[in-house]
Image (cartoon, rainbow, N blue to C red):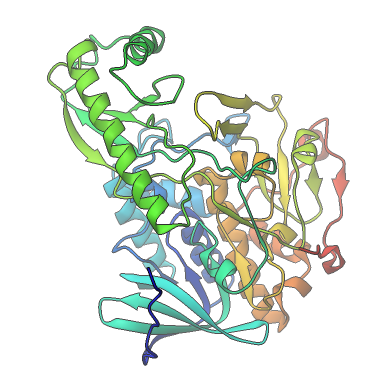
Length: 449
């Protein structure tokens, strides 16, 4: 099979802004709001016709907990999104279970109210570089090739597509063998008699028996389900697709097909063997398989498992997190869960958002400069949104200071996030027993690839 040379094509400029955010998932939503609230003109470009990323296109539900003493650590853009969801009737009182269709409406509403310009149905292709600076971004669109320009760019593609194609050093998967956490296609069934539904332990016994008999062909060790907003509807986050690459088109296609084969097995099993599910029917499958992990950009700072397990705090910490280390076995069954003690958390320093080798780019969402284990904790949607908010705010501050993000003092980014309502500062009594404060605010912490 021979390669095909793509002919040169004109790409009309369809958008220009001070800050351009690529990708409208939780990270991109946070980045757009963070930049807008810091006073920048913002354009958010999204490949689908709606925002929300894994919460909407991926059908991932509910939001995972990232709380301290019952208080939401992600008190900035993510809380704004949740408030809008609740106001539209799309969020249960638990603050976590949501209607994904309402999540689309709420995300768009808060962006428009913040003055963010939205461009839908534009899939990122390649950056156009001038030296170590991105001059323009090229996209595939319904109207053909198009271009967008921004003084500052924020990569919120989830897979670090922009950073990687701009030449930034990246890591992929775990250190031992390069394998990533499995992918999962989320699906919902309705028509469930929840009064007759087995409890989690009993349902898992049925699940394991069906696996042993060969009626279920899923490597996961248990059946993971959640309640939905609507009565009689159950959400399943339980397929497990291992050893596939979310950044490779053929591998990703194969992963989608394998996930749907597993869903068919689950549907047959539920109707035939699980009380309460006899008359259930399929109501949704995430339109994009859920991706936990792919590339991670190497930045000015690099956060490790050892630091997180010591509850590291930073003078330029831009996000607090205490969601556990949560590593789904890249090879099959088993999930490693390491919870934090009550009252503890770790912080992500600003340098983890600043990639090497490109002068006008930041990274928001999950593919930041952390190791495999830390990524398994901060990848969930609430902290990913806060990380995005920090990247967007930093892009606006770098413009204001007329400096590259690498030269920006991360403590100024933290101060701006505090002004925007992110919970990053409190009294010494609440700081926690572990984690001495570290100063990583100097740009001299740049790492080599």
